[in-house]
Amino acid sequence: MSFQKINSLFPNSLVSINGEIKTPKDANISIFDRGFLFGDSVYEVTSITENCPMFFDEHYERLINSAALIGLELRFPKKEILNQIYQLYEKTKYSQSYVRIIVTRGIGEISLDYNNCHDHSLIIIIKELPENPKTWYQNGVHMMISSILRNDKRSMDPNAKSGNYLNNILALNEAKKAGAYDAIMVNNDGFVTEGSTNNIWMIKDEKFITPSLECGLLKGITRTKIIKLLNEHNLPIHEAKISPTEILSSDEAFLTSATKSVIPITQINDTIIGDGNPGKWTKHISEIYQKFIEKHRSSFSFDNII
Amino acid sequence: MSFQKINSLFPNSLVSINGEIKTPKDANISIFDRGFLFGDSVYEVTSITENCPMFFDEHYERLINSAALIGLELRFPKKEILNQIYQLYEKTKYSQSYVRIIVTRGIGEISLDYNNCHDHSLIIIIKELPENPKTWYQNGVHMMISSILRNDKRSMDPNAKSGNYLNNILALNEAKKAGAYDAIMVNNDGFVTEGSTNNIWMIKDEKFITPSLECGLLKGITRTKIIKLLNEHNLPIHEAKISPTEILSSDEAFLTSATKSVIPITQINDTIIGDGNPGKWTKHISEIYQKFIEKHRSSFSFDNII
Image (cartoon, each protein chain N blue to C red):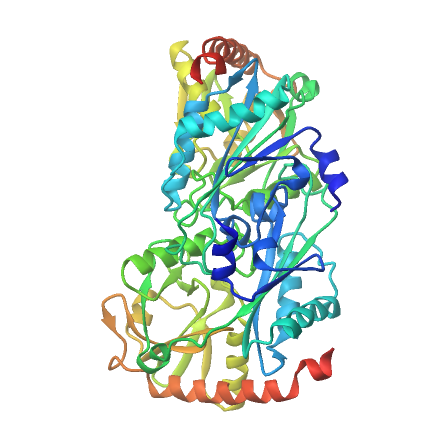
C-alpha cells in the first residue's frame, strides 16, 4: 500500500513505537516481531475526550491481566504508557481520540517457544475518534447470532484481549454479510457470550441480565461499570447463562463497549426485540452511564494524572 | 531490539515484502497491517534442499485453503510466489533453507470488518535451516498431554494455518515448562488432535493410527504423504478418534512435520511408550518416507519448475 494511502486512512494520526514517535507511513515494525508472526500480543483500546483518558487505570489493569493470560509479564509501568499517550495527544489534540495500546512479546527465533524473547514491544496508536452514527442510538442495531462459536476459555480465553482476533473477525464478517450490525457469539455449550467487540445485555421483566463471566467472554470495562451503577440505583442485575431462545424473547437488549457506550439492540436474527424501538430501561441505564462518564471526565484528566 | 541483534538472530537471511528484497534489519511492515493488529493472515513453511522447494504444490494448495477458511481469496499466483522464493534462494543458497510464506489481509481502517481491505501483503522469509538434533531421532522425544484444549473447529478451524497461534504457543510453553519436547493437544470432546506444530501418530498391534480430521487438526502434508505410503506398502492405517488413554498405552508413537519428517515419541507424560526406544514400525515408515522425499527432490527442482 502506498504511503499516501496510509496517511489518508489515518490523517494526522501518530504512533509511538518503543518510545519513538512516527507518522502513520513510517509506523513500521519488524516482520520478525511475534505480534506479526503469531498474533503474540495483547492490547487495549480507550478514548480521550476533554483531556481525560477514559478509565485508564482499568484499561491498564486489564492489559496486565491479558498479558498474564498469555504468559507475558507486563514490563511497561502505567506512568510510562500514560506519558507516551500524553506525548501523542499533545501533538494531535483531537476533540475525541481513539487510543490503542499494543504490547507484543517482541523478536526471537521463529519458534512458538517464547523463552528466547526478551525485548517486548510497546506500540501506541492515536487517531481521531469520529462521532458514532446517531441512528445506532436512536433506532438501535440489528444483531445476528453467529454460527461461529466463541473460542472456548480452555483453548484461548476470551478474557485475554490479544492479537488473535480471527475468531471475532469471522463472526463479525458473517454478520455483516447477512446485513447485521454485529454478531452475538455463543459458546460450546450454546450460551451467549459477547459481540465481536462488545458485551451483550438483555432485559426481561424489568431485570437486567448479562452473560456471566464463566460463559467465556471479555470482562468489559463498560460492563463492570454498568453492573456497579445498576446496583447503586437498586436496579435488579443478574449475571447468568443466557440461551439464544431467551435473548430472542427478551423485552429489551443492548450492547456496551468502551468506544460506543450503550447501543440499543432492536432486532436479533429475524426477531424484533420488544416493539422494535430502543427500550425504556435501555435509555434509563444509558442516561445514568452518560452522567457517570461525564463525572469521570471532570475528575480524571491529564492535568491531574501526569 | 537493535538492528545488530536482528541480523545476528537471522544471519544472511533475506525477506521479500511485496516483491522488495530486504535484509532482516530492514524487513518491516506497517503496524496498521491486519497481520500485526489481529493475526489476520495465513502462512506456510517449507524447506529447500538440493534445489528442491519441498512439496511446493501441496503447500501452495494449503495456503489457498487456509485463506479460504478465513474468508480471504488468495491473489498471488503460484508462479509468482515460486519466483520470489527463487530470487531469495539464489542470493542465499544455504544447503538447507527454511522458507516461510505469509499472506496478510493488508491495511484498512482499524476495524474487525475486512471489507475495506484491498491490498493483501505477501511476505517471504528465507533463512538457514540447521540440521535437527540427531538425539530426537535416535532417542525419541517426550511429549506432554496439554491442559490447553485445541481450538474447536467451529470457533477457529485448526485446519487454517493462520497468524493466530496463541493457542499452540500456550500449549507448547506449558509442555516446555514441564520439561517435555512438545504438547499433545486434545479437543473439547477429549480426543487427541495434534502437537503444537506437528501431527501425532500411534501404533498399536501393528496398526498405524492417527487422529481423524474431524477431531480438528491441520491436514499435515507429511501426514498425507505417510498415509499414502502406508497404503502403498499395504501397512494398516486408521484415521480415528484417539483418547489420551489409548495413546498412553500405544506400542509406538511418533510425530510428523514438514521440517522434521518423522520423530519417534518415547514418553508421554510420565508413561514410557513401548520399551522407551524408537519402535521398529516407526523406523520402518521413517525409512520409507526418507526414500520418498529423496525421490521427490530428484524430480522436483527449481531447474525444471521455474
